[in-house]
Length: 248
Image (cartoon, rainbow, N blue to C red; front, top):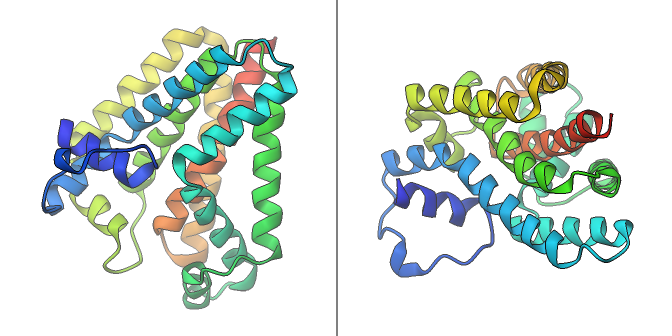
């Protein structure tokens, strides 16, 4: 499982991975297995954030939230934010035409809608981070659980763009281990939060279902940009959920 994890870290973050540790060729099976490691990548990100939060805990809460968000974005190289912006522009500019929507997603230009959505999502994350009193649990679990929903997206949604990296992950990801991992993560979430976490989890699931329905309606399924958009939105939703659960 080490090689798939290293491949996932290389694909999903800007964290340094020594070239000698990576495979010389990326077989379809290895790329598929790497998708299973997404929650582990999320755990690595969460632990780094927790370490940073521990070092700067004496600073004012607003500054802590801003620095954590900056580190969070730097670790992922804004890769998923780019997907979010592309999807936002495509959703508006595509005007219901799947081919036009996919073409706009592929365009590297970011329009005003994409910028507005990026700013909105980052503001929600910042406000949630600044509001949390139990910061450690939230910043460790949020990257893990949001990436679990990306796995669920791969499992349940057709991949519509040919020859993309996401297509290999969708096609070759081991299904049974993926469902087992999702079950384990759900049980772990409920064990940590107890009965107070049930309704928020239902809310998160409803948001995911709405996003999935919208992307199927717009383009017939998912792409790599869609996966990035779902990840970013689910991170924001989970941070709000942890404010909901842990503050009351």
